[in-house]
Amino acid sequence: MGFSEAPRAEDLSKCVHCGLCLNACPTYRELRVEMDSPRGRIYQMVQVSKGAEITDSYREHIDLCLACRGCETACPSGVQYGRLVEAARAEIEQKVKRPLGQRLLRSFVFETLLPSRGWLKIAGAGLAVYQKSGLQRLTRASGILKLMGGLGQAEALAPPMETPFFYRHMGRVFAAQGERKYRVALLAGCIANISFARLNEATVRVLQANHCEVTVHGEQTCCGALHVHSGLKDPARKLARKNIDALLDGGYDAIITNAGGCGSTLKEYGELLEHDERYAERAQRFSALMKDVNEFLASIELNTRMGEVRASVTYQDSCHLAHGQKIRSAPRELLRKIPGLTVREMRLSDLCCGSAGIYNVLHTDMSLQLLEKKMQNVNASGAERIATANPGCMLQLRAGVEKWGSGQRVSHVVEILDEAYRAAN
Ligand code: SF4
Ligand code: SF4
Image 1 (cartoon, rainbow, N blue to C red):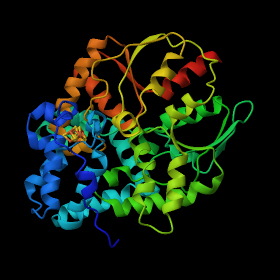
Image 2 (cartoon, rainbow, N blue to C red; image 1 turned 90 degrees about the vertical axis):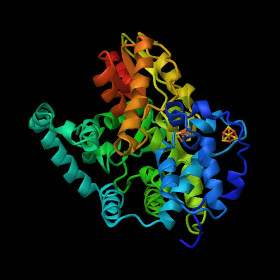
Image 3 (spheres, helix red, strand yellow; image 1 turned 180 degrees about the vertical axis):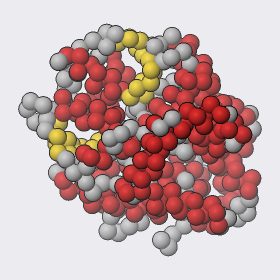
Image 4 (cartoon, helix red, strand yellow; image 1 turned 120 degrees about the vertical axis):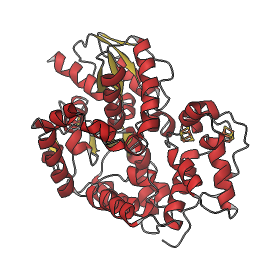
C-alpha cells in the first residue's frame, strides 16, 4: 500500500463550520450531540490529523455515522463528507489493532464470505433451511430472540433467502426483446445473488424489454462497497480490480447495477484505485461506464408498452443514489410512466431509513429509531406501496412495515416496471 488512508487536509479544510448540515444528519437529529453531527465529526478528524490520539470515543462517533451523505447534499461548501468518513475509517483500520475475535470475524465476513460464491451459497443454503423449515418461526415464537439483545434484533433483519439463487444465471447472455439497441452487463452483487434473486431476474427482464442484450458475466464479484464503508479499502481494491478485468473490455454500452449503495462505490473505483499505476486509468473508464438501472432507463427511450399497476406508491430515496450519485428524478420519472400507478411523496424521503449497509446489524438501536420515524412518514403519505432503489433499504423498510406499517408492499422500482411489462402481455 505505502500511502496514508487518512482524510486529506484539502478535503477537511473545505468545512467552514457553518452548521447548515446539522439538520440533514440523522444521528444529530436523534441525539442532538455535536460530536455526532457532520461538523462535529469533521472537527474530530481535524484534531486527529493534527496528531490527537485515536480514542475509543473518536471511533464510536465515526462508527455511529451512517455514511448516508445527507450532509453532502446540504453542505454549501462542497465538503465531500463521504470521502472523509471512508478515509477516517480506513485510517482507524490502519492504525488501531482490533481485538483478535473481531479481526477474525471481520476477516471471515469481508475477505472470505462476501467475495466467495461458494461460501455465500453455503451460507444461503443454511439460512434457507432455517427460514423455510419452520425453525425460524419456532425460534421467533419462543421469545428466545428477545433475550439475545442485539443478536436477536439482527436476526429480525436477516434477509430472507430466495431460492433458486441468482448464481444459476452466471455466465449467461440474455437476448434483447425485439431490436438490440444496447449491450449491457449486469453486476448482480454478492448477497443479492442469494437474497434478491427475483429482483435481479426482474432487472434482466426490464432491460431486455428495453432492447438491451444483458450479459451476466461469470467472473464478476462483490463490488466492495461494504468493505469501503467499513474502512477496508485494500480488500475492496482487490475486488475492484477483479470486476474491472471481468467487464471493462467487454465492449458494453453500460455496466448496470440495481443497488444504489453498490453503484456509489462502483462509480468511485477511479478514486479507490488512483494510486494503482496499472489500474488507475482502467478504473476511471470502468466508473464512467457504471449506471444505476434507474439512471440508465431514464436516459433511453423507455418502452411504454405497459399494462396497469393499480396502486398508490411512495418513493423512498436510497441515500447512496440521492446523496452519493445525485439521482433523484430518474426513479420518480419511471414510476410516473407506469399506467394506473399514483406517486405520493412522503416527508423527508431522502432521510436515511437506518439500513446503511450493515449499520442495522452493528447499531440496531439507532437504526430502529430512524426506521420508526421513516415509517411515520410512509404511513402519513397514505400510499399502499413503497418503492425504493436499493436492496438494503428494501429489507429495512420491510422490517419497518412489519413493526409500524399498515401492510404496505415494498418493491424496487424495476420490480414495479416488470409488473407493468408483464401486465401488457
Ligand atoms: S460540512 Fe458543510 S454544511 Fe457542515 S459545517 Fe462544514 S461547511 Fe457547513
Ligand atoms: S453521512 Fe449521514 S450520518 Fe454521517 S454525518 Fe453525514 S448526514 Fe450524518
